Image (cartoon, rainbow, N blue to C red; front, side):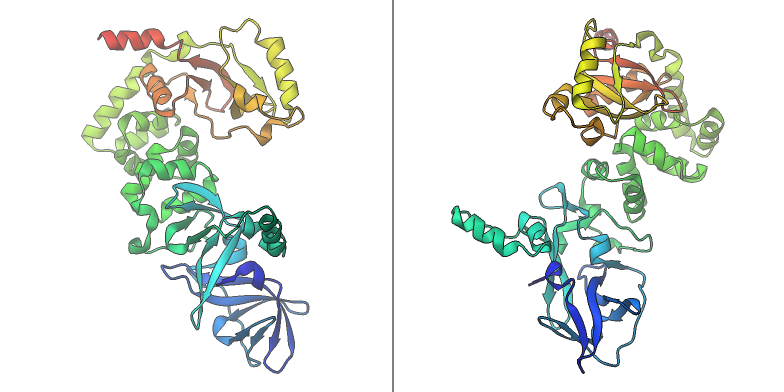
Length: 404
């Protein structure tokens, strides 16, 4: 087994000992058996040279290629190891978690293949040439360190940085996951990667995943959908979730999407849309604390003491920008475990679950139960924070429903 960090930076010579440059990256074909197809060699005189793997003759202390090599270009379904995999997020399909790639393992079977990834501490130290030092130091304390290896079959990259990559359905490992679990994983990455992952999924399964994303991701995704696509995706989503997405649109756009849905779906959604005639404005509270991203934890604590002394309760602290648009949230426990000089943007949760003034009490309650949240911020269409609704505020409504 060879690791990419052991190859990167090695000198590359032709078989007649002419210096070409240093190995900078490797390109592989995204498939069930990801074959290394090209070498990226950094030449001082010619820049990046992309050379097909078939010209590689030998790997030792240096790399040797044929003297009459030709260059090539990146093709469809190919990714870089350094740019697209190393230090990027992947889903560990066995451990059911998102992890970071610290090194990439390569297997030599006459041809080179990506065997898997190292997600352990050794992978980090190997990148800096300090693997032996770490192993020796650990041995002196009686600790044996080994790579934390995940095979290619057990992972799914999240950072698919090139839009041309198409995974065949029979090879698509994400299809085997529960939609709820995949949504949780995707919320740990950015919206660009979410869109790219959704594009390689079956249409119905993608819609199920979207239905399990929080409203912020849903809103961002639907901004890029045509009315026809929005109607089709919403037809797969639970009506309670679909109506909350519809409420983020202007009435004209909402009506246009509804007109494209079948009669039964339209009837259910129109009924649910009529429920916000009893909005949450009458149970809104202004007993909440907002801070700026650059505020330190010590400054936040002082602000809580100044502003929240008379509050009935305080569940979360909300992070807003100078225009009062919500950016993040954190709880008191997350605040108290930080060093006093740490700015809140370093530990806040960016994916805030929110509701609107037009959101029905039924949907507010469902969101609280689904996400296990005891308070939800209320925002307007421009994401300005205008209040808070807590589990206490809606308790009377819960009792009414229980009696009925």
